[in-house]
Amino acid sequence: MTGTVDETYVAALQHDLIDPGDATLVGVVRRPTGWFRDVTDENRPALGPPAALIDEAKDRTEELKRRGMCDEGAHNAAWEETDFARRYREYLANDDAAHDALAALAARVDGGEDVWLVCFEGEGKRCHRHTLLEYLHEQF
Image (cartoon, rainbow, N blue to C red; front, side):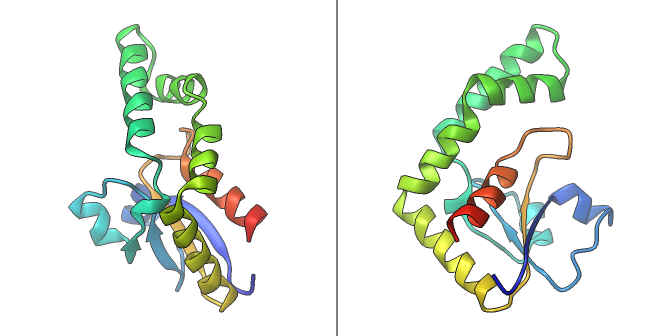
């Protein structure tokens, strides 16, 4: 790839914790909020995890929090318990819209564009953007 691909979370951009330079900020969330759209240059919902997987992980997170786990710990435990990374990778490999979005993104980077993948989860939480970044490097 001639351009670069990196990743961050929206709060880091909002609070100037990182400087993406001239990189295009590409949201990779299924359900973007208005304020998320205000921070990113574009959003590719097809690169967000499937809604059913998101909902399953969120439900498990809430259950673990009710049992006394902190938010970050519950999130990370739910990620493992739902086999989130493997299931997200399967989605990326088998969904036509995700494949098309990945190929288009890879072509932009091959053309010299610098891109940052952006989602909601902060540094302490497991996040699909890390899996997506790895997948992009492996496949393209």
